[in-house]
Length: 335
Image (cartoon, rainbow, N blue to C red; front, side):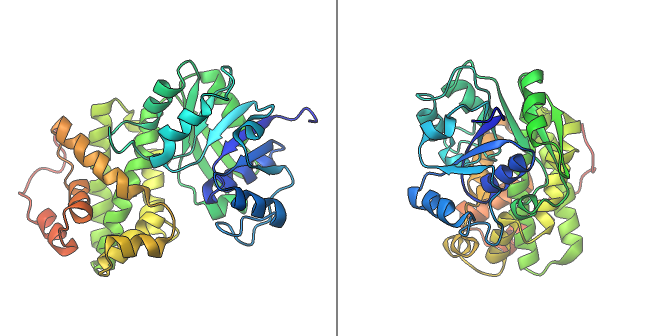
């Protein structure tokens, strides 16, 4: 090694590869791990992620590796970018090989479906003693990989470790703001996926711009309501990781959750919509976790509840919209 800082990055999909490219542009040495050996072999051979980011050459500072141990070699920090459904199981693998001194950050978005727990809770359970943090914000992988201007939030449990990790990403037209509100950043990143499905369904039904704006605004109100109950900062939810990511994910067809909703609104089955998207749809699983959590907290989240009922109770999309429209009149803002 030449003395440069090294990040062990786990997850060689589109988002993990894009983050590897951003780190590499800043002169960071990136060990990029993926769970499929053949995919890693392809990255090494092609110097391009043809499966998820075709047409973008890997930076010379990105080094695909096939084993956890090789990925962690001389690492100064850890970044995880794998689907939330596999997050706890991966932490279980990681804890046998990771050094106690390493901080663990993640770019994954979602919940543990069985428990409704946020990902930082899983890190605390599986990797006790490690400092941790999350990065999230209005960013599509392709644009980050290409080096287009973007901004993101990095929140962690320790200010020094958070500042350090943010400094690795910040630069080259990529602003990385810091925060100590891990819960708020996690909630914003997870809940916007559910709302993007709702907006996609409405657009697939042909309901137009007015409906889209109403769903996004009232959806944000639901995010704020749940965030307040769970201790998130309202400022965080109005920032990049909250409102910013919500706008991005609900309005641009690069969003897999929006595309998933569009397919359902146009009459596709859940299975057909997943196949059409071709990648993990985090909002599909997050909708179930949030419905169960809202029931436990006795919290009224009508838009997210109707998304759950469409996805898991076979409610027709048009009937879900009618259910929302037929709710009793009320004040817009209540205590």
